[in-house]
Image (cartoon, rainbow over all chains, first blue to last red; front, top):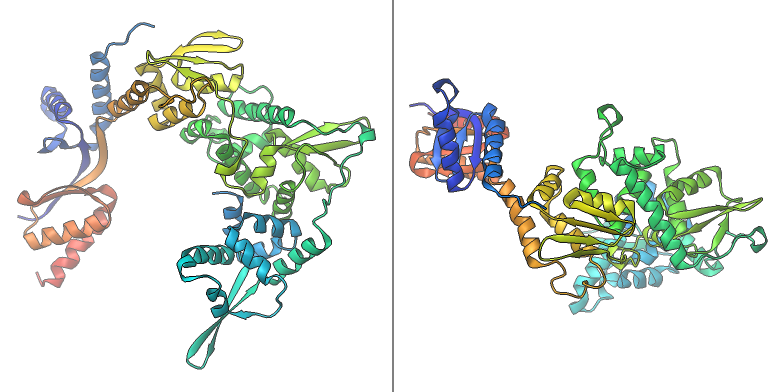
Length: 71
Length: 449
């Protein structure tokens, strides 16, 4: 087998966050799957063009998870 | 970095040119470490070079490190010049003071460092200003400059805007002149750092504006020697100097006053410590009166009437009430997220609140309630839960030797992001792709594969 080099973006995050991103990936239609390699518990290798989307989704997710007390 | 470090970074001939003015010589002498001062004075009246061995014998063995620091500083400022000559097999080192520096410092010491400026006459209405009055003026002026930065200043001074653009604090006119990340961080820095940043850009910009840089530096250094609070007439300033005085007045470094017939300028404390190249720690002017009270329930009370302070607070505090001398607000996840989005870090927010703590709480330990500091940092971490880096993933490396060699090489370039020796898989920063490819190719050819 010859050496392969894949361009992309490595994402480093905590374990639950990785699971959330994986779920996001599985919900995508086949043509838009973005996870290229599942490296380990805290690392994912994904397509570069999807990074902004991932970040936005993660932010929305965290936003929905926090309670903002009314001032 | 301060003024003297800036001088040391100038090219040699430019620095030598600056020593033509005895103000530079005195300012440099004043900025030296104690041992350095001693050496300069020791060598001042010696005309011929002395051997390097004599110099190194001056220090006792246990003080050699201090000696080395002093000599290095002297050489960096080009005050002490070293010449090496080959005499037979041995190398002879001889030391001498910079001739221009020596001549001018001697002159200054023997003739007396008389103030070159005549204090403005009392008749014209000039009077000494009290320190408090001057400080207040300087602070007010500086606030106006900073307000310019956040874009809510009244009138526009082109020179200030230009300087901010050069320093990268606001984006260029074409892209809207908006405040940048660097600009937000600048707002939270302490005043001496801010002043120095602006002054350095001012000096750097002088050349492009067709001003004579050496003369400009010389005049700035001279300002450091003028009596704070004493009025000096502007009549005997050169045209460039009076232009500078006007511009420095915008920054609050000097105060310009006009009488009925003549005008005069007064240096402030900021000018004297900044221009004398004293380090930030020794500056007395940044011990400003604090005004912020933070409670453990995330409420912030800021006793201030300065528009600038309010603007800065608004970066990370949700303001609820604003009274003439009091701002009440709260710190929340939303409000600090706004600050993070502007490129401000949690540490900067925390240190700003600590530095500007109200005198009533300044003796508390810690000044800022721990819950607040921790929470602000936690919120920041929360934002950075996902870290993404452009990279290349290499797989199927044929041998372990190749894999190890590549990992070592990439690690030495600080480009290794992730590795998995079992699978012989590694992830490297994207910008190193070419480098890694060439390395693998070279490795293969050296093995004859």
